[in-house]
Image (cartoon, rainbow, N blue to C red; front, side, top):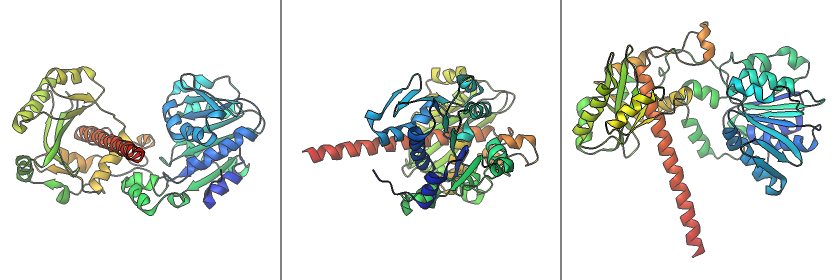
Length: 422
């Protein structure tokens, strides 16, 4: 079937004939679709031999790439074993692997490949990537990578994208994609995507820039005059039953402060930080009692408490006390973007009594550019106890709400189809 490609997509499909072909830039900009089409052509026309595909995990590779490939080629043209990761498509054997750890390198050591498709390449382990490049030793073999921008000192940027010698030798081809390069996106959808990112994540995922994360993490988004609310206003909202959910978050500590946070979530999806527990040299039972005391004040259970997953025994302690505690997804970058975006959209507020949270919001920062820690592309591990608890609760509850919305959308579609049948 014919596809309507944008000029950038058509250019990539036609000219991606280098040893290493890198499509990078904004999210939803058509990079993966273009690479999928090019990869299908390569499977059919490339040099003989085994092929390699890699993602952060096999699961993300299937979700991001394989499912779309399967839809494009049809069931008659492939078989895939999810357990072994062996894909056979158009008669070609393709090894599919996850590459988020140094152990992934052992999966391909000693192998020879005639081509490689690497999805989200900046998130794959450097040892694996370097080994996979070496393993593509079949004559005329080619490599295709997709990625969103990352830290400008990331090895993919320094060793490949900015490698002048490789570019002079014709070994590396670069294609920078922007949102406008995906002609299937509506203007309304583009605005929704733009509203989903803030700060450095906007510059990377929307502008498609390889920029450093620097300064105060929430410096551009948290405005105390806007986001700090008098305690009596929040207490009045509790009395008027303005909150649909009550949720909590914890960051464990002993020598460092242990933090507990309680949020009320309105029917409109706005978050209000009601109170904070911020104390050092306290046992888990102390924060459990604090949560239980608040449940008594609210005359209801907290719907969920998202906890630091690093100490599961302490989560069990909360559960034994009858609290709905569970381990949280601790992804730092995704969590920070969630919090940034909520502040940017004026969807999160804090009680003026939560002085420790307010303080950390104003000092939690990235390392200076010349600090060796800057290459980690993460904030400094200081002034972050309330920040971690805040990230756990807001990011994980937003994921829950999105999941509920998708479930509702699927149910609505199913009901609509049933109505058509009758």
